[in-house]
Image 1: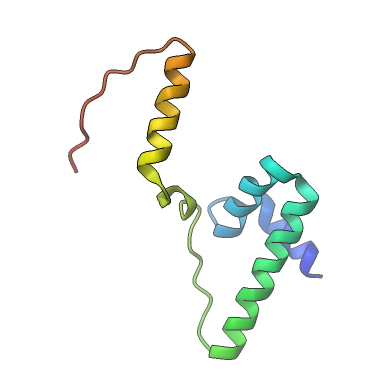
Image 2 (image 1 turned 30 degrees about the horizontal axis):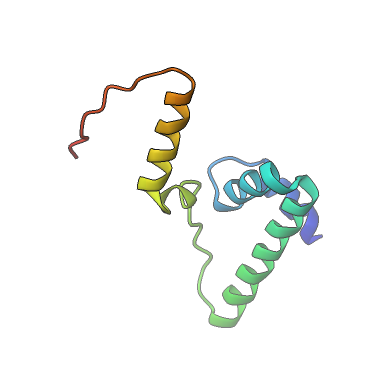
Length: 93
């Protein structure tokens, strides 16, 4: 039952489990990604039941926050290797 829930969550959009599935499936394959999502769901269910708190989805952009500057540099290097020269300007927020 948990694996079926993980497959459905992997096909969804805009959730932490969908982002995790896509990230792992690209590297390891669909079956391993499904099992990893099922494992993450089991851990989340355990903590929800143990601590009595409602489930809080971390969001689809949870993984984008890690090593952000490193990712930007790598993507720029890949674009330059393809022959594109970016016009760099600092982003003001």
